[in-house]
Image (tube, rainbow, N blue to C red; front, side, top):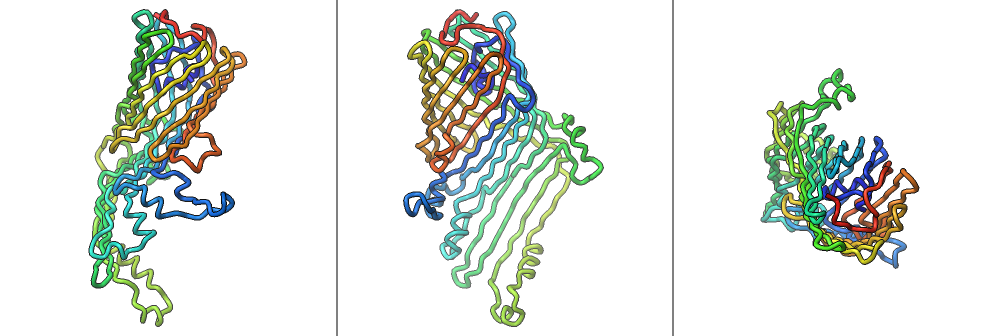
Length: 422
């Protein structure tokens, strides 16, 4: 969708078809992304051809890795954008509010809940790396794109100032549930350190002016997207991009939270249950409270990194209005989370652009994507996603972006990939 400004968020080397693009607050771009370590069909299994479904916990557990099973939700909304051409240079300015929440739950946590504790008698359910990392920030970016060598090489960079708004960060998480083979007792141990920061002071009701807090720039960070595109012929291109390099330093209302201790659950006394007709939940809660030392205290500043990602892509023009592209992608955090896509793009001049894609994610191979750009005049509407909504049972990833831009001026014919952009 390289005739849409928001494509530059993925590929900063794109040369636009319009000299000017303007995005209005809240309507130029809204995006949502979800992912899980298993596809939805692993949870719901059809019993009678699709009329009724049942849970399949064993299938879910079998697809998990011992310690890395990430879940996430990421969304963004544009506050504004402006792109324009200055001689041979394309310049862009934009601001977006971005939220990124990532949860990791070890395999043993699910196995313990679904299959019970008998499997861990004489061993332990490892719950290490259980984590919640959530970040909200405002991004202010300036981008530059330039074509060189008669248009065969294109360079792009987006430099970002990051305004941290809220953060919750799991710094350490070492936990387990061990079973005694003789007495069937369960011993729970935990050693957890988390950090948090916010421009809102939740401890002081008099300091909850959201407008004032949103203008707080104490939690500053930086970021960058860089890329290069090579066009050996008029029809063929190769692109390499690294996005989301950077970090945020948190200084406002920073706190540290620690939980450590050991608790042994010895079971429920049946004679007490008969006598009092109570399960003794209150005594269990009191025991947990006394066993684990929970502390919250002011913290020094700390830093969290963005999640970098890499795109490698090639595209080939089959005709003046038809193109096919092949793209590989991976995130670079706690290992790799790769994906791939092949897309077919068809267009009708500057008015209509339509694409269909086939996308592969980890353990998800049945994903059809879509895209549509419609521009009757200066108003440009677009929607793009990597999964068709009715195919939700076969995916563990779902991403969609939509919005309305205002575009003006022409830089080149949309169907031609020329080498004279310099």
